[in-house]
Amino acid sequence: MKMKIAVRYQSRGGNTKAAAELIAKAAGVTAESVDVPISEPVDLLFIGGGVYAWDIDKELKAYLAGLNPETVGAAAAFSTAGGMNGAKKIAAVLKTRGINVREEMLALRLLARNHTMLGGKGAGVTLSDKETKTVEDFVSKMIA
Ligand SMILES: Cc1cc2nc3c(=O)[nH]c(=O)nc-3n(C[C@H](O)[C@H](O)[C@H](O)COP(=O)(O)O)c2cc1C
Image 1 (cartoon, rainbow, N blue to C red):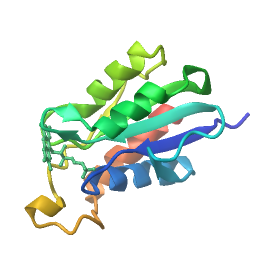
Image 2 (image 1 turned 180 degrees about the vertical axis):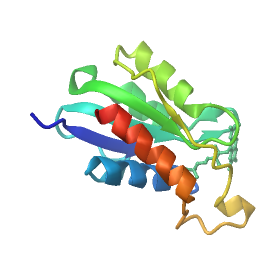
Image 3 (image 1 turned 90 degrees about the horizontal axis):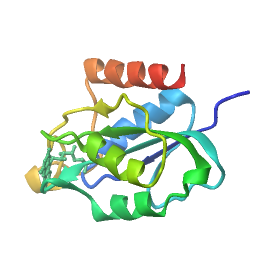
Image 4 (image 1 turned 120 degrees about the horizontal axis):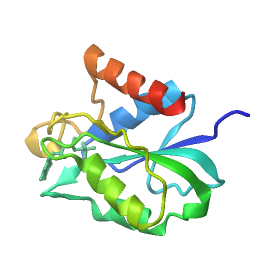
């Protein structure tokens, strides 16, 4: 049977959204922000966010806290944080919720490439070919 996959992201500046959209494309689904609840149980949830002042966003935290472990077969965490591994932070919260987290995570260091605070336009982040390949390889491994 076909694996049921969902992609959710929290993104202030667009980096994580761009990564999420690539993940979703590679997985054949649509990426949604954490504003959109999971409507039906999934086998695999790709869940990502940035790190802001040493922590993940509170909206993302609330989303993780509200996830029903019975609707998530497994989670694959990803992050675009500048230096810290945001995916590890996400995974740690998921584990406390009793959600099965895939060992491998995706940590793309996109820095504040497009953040409005630093002159970016807050939209239209483009990943390099190398970054795109990294994302695609991650997805292939997760759904293999
Ligand atoms: C206000 C602010 C604070 C940040 N603090 C951290 C931090 O403490 N650690 C880190 O690794 N990255 C930090 N970053 C980098 C972001 O995590 C990184 O730019 C990420 O790609 C943002 O994702 P987004 O564009 O989807 O919001 C910070 C960025 C901003 C704008």
